[in-house]
Amino acid sequence: MAYDRNNIFAKILRKEIPNKTVYEDDFALAFHDIHPQAPVHVLVIPKGDFISMDDFSQNAKPAEVQGFFAAVGKVARLVGVDKTGYRLLANHGADSHQEVPHFHVHIVGGGALGPLLAKRG
Image 1 (cartoon, rainbow, N blue to C red):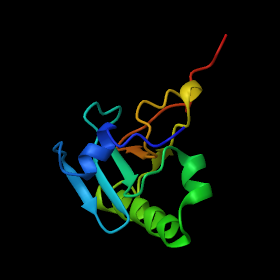
Image 2 (image 1 turned 60 degrees about the horizontal axis):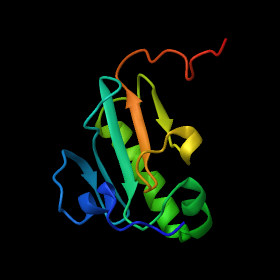
Image 3 (image 1 turned 90 degrees about the horizontal axis):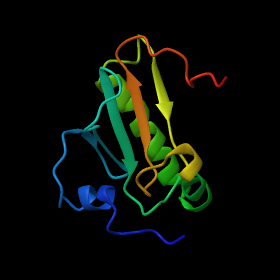
């Protein structure tokens, strides 16, 4: 699958769509989710054209990987969930319900989150 340069996160990176920025550096942009699932819900996206974690882990340069994950940690501290706990979530593909074909990590916290997945009966 080729990277879609018209996905919403690519447009956000190009400043075509506004966002509530939490943090930005050479490797990542972090912003508040428009449909938060917890009191704190921030998305962190790499600045490169990566579709998924699989794509990122295979094709990003070591400096991009290090810079991105350093940004994730910094954002968690900036939004104040580093002391109380938070969840990192990255969806990959249709089965995980990845909605935007640009690799991104959700930082979710700010309160008790409950179990990771609903139990199937």
